[in-house]
Each structure stands twice: as structure tokens, then as C-alpha cells.
Image 1 (tube, rainbow, N blue to C red):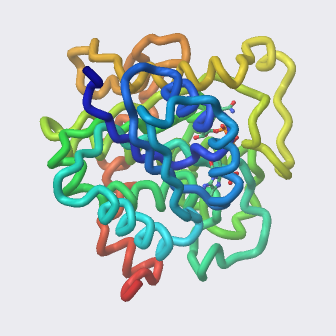
Image 2 (cartoon, rainbow, N blue to C red):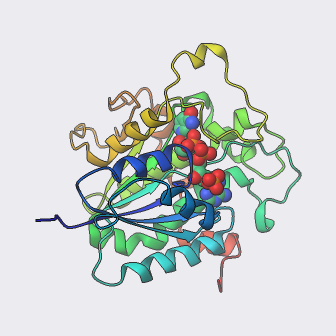
Length: 298
Ligand SMILES: NC(=O)c1ccc[n+]([C@@H]2O[C@H](COP(=O)([O-])OP(=O)(O)OC[C@H]3O[C@@H](n4cnc5c(N)ncnc54)[C@H](OP(=O)(O)O)[C@@H]3O)[C@@H](O)[C@H]2O)c1
């Protein structure tokens, strides 16, 4: 007898590691229903139509999502909820989308924001999406998988985020990307605290995967000493998928970061993200986001 389909809502599954992770789920016997947000719906649908999977078992729906546009994020969330209806659960929310660009362009940022585009895409809009889906996620007892990065450890002083992540800060991708991923990890901890006992919240690193589109058009090169640890895109996808199933959570509730080699990082490795005041600061409420980013009336 076929088992009940599990529903996955995901960002960043149009290419790279996210696409690979979904492709791997499409090979499983377990039926899945995917609702994916993508900038280019047609090319994403075309990419999935080339994947050989059992269409009687799995389904893939692609909805428009441009994460630099918070009004569009609100529209996307509304469409997701409409598609799900009252009855259907969200088993997994995978927040994987990211870009790796600096803030060298003069401000303001997208839609007049004080923040640079990488911060909005990598953190603010996906944090806002969790707010918008919150009731459904709670009702579903969902697992929320935030795709993070070991690059967060490149931020030595989190006090610099405020300046670095502003539109037109002049900071390069080398600085903005780790800072934006740290902001996202602070938000991940905040959601873990908010949703304790209601949802499972996990951060995961895919590892160093040079063969993706992450640094497209960015002035960003990896030092050769890092490249020796590089993994393939399929390995990156598999590493992310571990966060869907691992249940051996450490007793310490702050240890939510699953490394690409499958260990839960200790407090010292993620110490920069453990300050609760900082988590609160980088986790604005839904109304604050809507007011500050002009989302009202969307
Ligand atoms: N590659 C690595 O070495 C590495 C290491 C550690 C962590 N990570 C993390 O892994 C995740 C996936 O990265 P990747 O390497 O697979 O990069 P990628 O190939 O560039 O994939 C990024 C995904 O995010 C989407 N995206 C980017 N900007 C967007 C926007 N404005 N609106 C909507 N979607 C947007 C992309 O859509 P398009 O297809 O439209 O571009 C794509 O689906 C990221 O969270 C990244 O931080 C990667």
C-alpha cells in the first residue's frame, strides 16, 4: 500500500544544492508533494521535467518567488497556504535560497530598503516567510531546515553586522555573505526558541560545494587550502537531506547545527550565534518587517 505523501515547501530548489536535494527525494519510495518557490518558474519546471521520477508517486509544483521582494514573499506564502488548504500538513520547510554578493552598490537596497540585497534574500525574507507560515507550521508540527554555512565562523565580531549588511556599505561578498548567513543562523536559533515543542528546527551545512551558482557574477574566489575539502553537488544535497531525518539531537537545545560530515557542532563552534539578545535583534517580528520594508497592503 502506498504511504501518505509528505509535503515539502522549499526555497532555493531551482538549481544547485537545493535542486539536487529534491532530486534525491524524488528517487525515494516515500511519496512527496513539493511546493517550490523559484524566481524563474518556467526554467525550474523545465529542469524538473527532465528528472526521471515516478509522477504517480510524487508531484512538483513551482510558484513564483523573488526573495528580494518582501511583498512577493507575502504573495508566495498566501499561494502556498491556498494550495495546501485546511487539511494538508507541511512536513518540511527547507529554507535553502541564498546569494553571495557584496554591498558595494550604492543604497538604498531593493524596494528602498536600508538593507543590502544579500541580507534580504539570505535572511530577512526567509525569516519573514516563517512568520507568514507559522500557524500552518505549528499545526503541522513541521521540521524547518535552515541551510546554513560554516562561513558563519568568519564573523569574529557580530557587532559589525549592523554596518556590513546595510545597502551601500561597500563590504565585499567575502564579508557580506558570512554576515548574512550568521544573521540567518541567529534567526534559526530564535525560531528554535519560539517554536520549542511545536516544530523541529535544524540548521545544516552542505559543506564546501564549488560547483553551484552561489557566486555567479560575484567578486569572490576561494583560497586553494579550502578547496581541498570541496565536495560534489550530489554530496551537498545528501548532506542537507540528513537534516530531514536526524533525530539524535544533543541534550543541549542550542546545538542545532548539523555539519556536512554529520556531527552536531558543539557550542564553541557556533558560539558567535548563541547570544540570545543578538538572536532577538536579528529576528524582527512580522509587523516590524512589514512596516519597515513597506509590505503593508500587499
Ligand atoms: N556552495 C557552497 O559551497 C555552500 C557552502 C555552504 C552553504 N551553502 C548554502 O547552500 C545553499 C544553496 O547554495 P548553492 O551553493 O546551491 O547556490 P545556488 O546554486 O546559487 O543556489 C541558490 C538557490 O537560491 C536561489 N535564489 C538566489 N537568489 C534568489 C532570490 N533573490 N529569490 C529566490 N531565489 C533565489 C537560486 O535560484 P536561481 O536558480 O534562480 O538562481 C537557487 O535556487 C545556500 O543557502 C548557501 O548559503 C553553500
